[in-house]
Image (cartoon, rainbow, N blue to C red):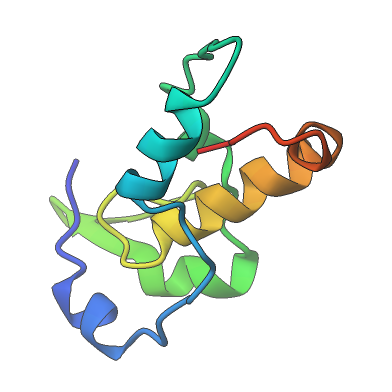
Length: 101
């Protein structure tokens, strides 16, 4: 199922949480001694939608109403929410100079 959230994205207040810029990332990673990656393929699926926000994420399919319990990919502020979550999960690593994106 896919929802059309264009109207919601238009009216949503932008979340200005900083996401690392690609050029800064490439500069920092080129200076690293060790480079490691973790696959966060389903990371966005860990961002839970608040009960209040679920009403805005309803979709209707064949006369049935469905609500998202996790943030769908096409929501305007999903990347900012994900970056905030990653920074909250890895505060110690960030203080050691790790780049978490």
